[in-house]
Image (tube, rainbow, N blue to C red; front, side):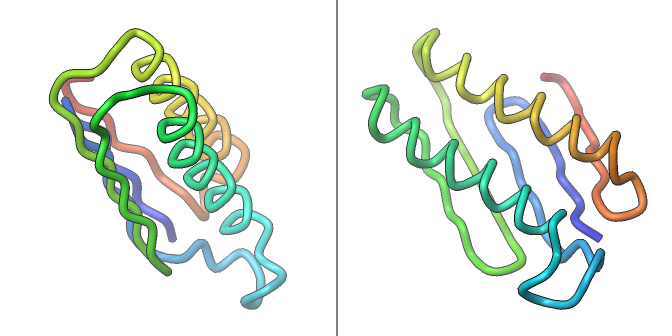
Length: 99
């Protein structure tokens, strides 16, 4: 299961969905695409200092101050992850605090 935690200035995720074998897991693939899109969009569309680390089985994003554009990208990412969790609740969970 992928476990996502959303906090003020920080998003972390760990685990694997376990929906299907490696290379066929649509939940892991969807989560990876959302995370990669956030990383790419922040770098190409803002001047914000958002540190994003993507590794197999983990994702972490940290920031202190961000522009309205950066906040919009983060909000879009969060909504995408929440939608994924709503559609596949056995494979991904989202815990939000002080967002």
